[in-house]
Image (tube, rainbow, N blue to C red; front, top):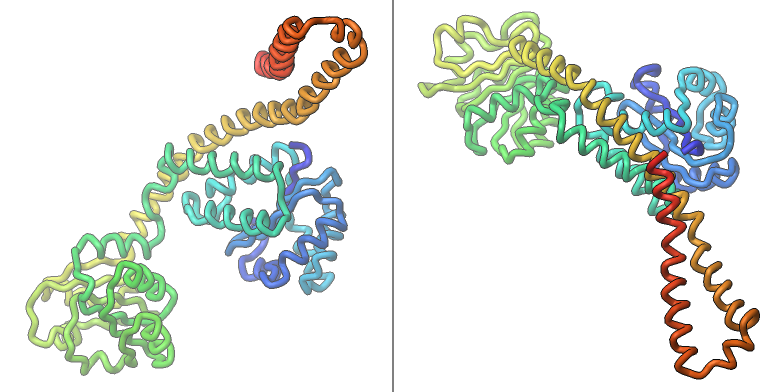
Length: 407
């Protein structure tokens, strides 16, 4: 395990917008990694890049320190100026041996993520490894580590509540909206085309909602979101004259005054009297309090969602100790497995050595005696030697494993 090394650049020390400068284009990633692999005597390597981390995981006997990292990053030639390189290296975290494995396990279980409990990191990690494996950048050593990484992450997600409840306002909002049992052809008005509404729109689209009308102060942005949703686009003023009806409103704007007033809401109803749904994710709210007093509305607003998100996040942090215990147990088990693997590799020559001894005994040391035997005696001797050969091959392996386990 002492050859496992990690150079990590993460959100903990580096701003997210700066991390993007470290991302290597996929087109020449393989070539760059093969180059540094050969240049620095790295036996195996893979590269991980997500929205909040860029990491290089490698197997090497080289001393990996800040000076090595500087030369390594320079050799990658990703277009960083010397000043930027120095800033990034100052913020880099370097792990080796058991600390490197611990870091990989914590990363795969999302304990090192911006949002503890998010499951996206495990498939990202697996895909990064698989891409490098297919490119011939990794081998048996990294395979063993990744088997441990995946096993541990699955145990943490299965046996703890670290990812049980959503903690983003958008996912909570969608969950509540889903509980309203709206049909997939429900008429959905989206007011505002910012990131929040874009994100919740992705949930709706993923779950087969198809009937959208997007309103935004800047029409071009409304058109962009509407194009993604295969819906209609309007400017914000068009709300006052919109007469196609609706089943749900999703609103999130930067307005300091309510956009959905009693007058506007009545106009949007256009004579319908069924109970509608409003998802208001704006701060301050886009919905005037009078609307809730004067009309039947299923109302989902951001403040209550934030409180739920806060409770859910605390519950996830309460699970950290349990997750860390699972990680610790898996590291201990892996250390034993690694030692057993080393014994297996060391014992690979045992069968051939025993066969060499057998051949020497029959064909050289005891050649005359064997030649003097009749065929029946030779057959018995052959059976005895074959039996003993098989037993001798297994005995050293079993004994070595017993010693390892008992110690």
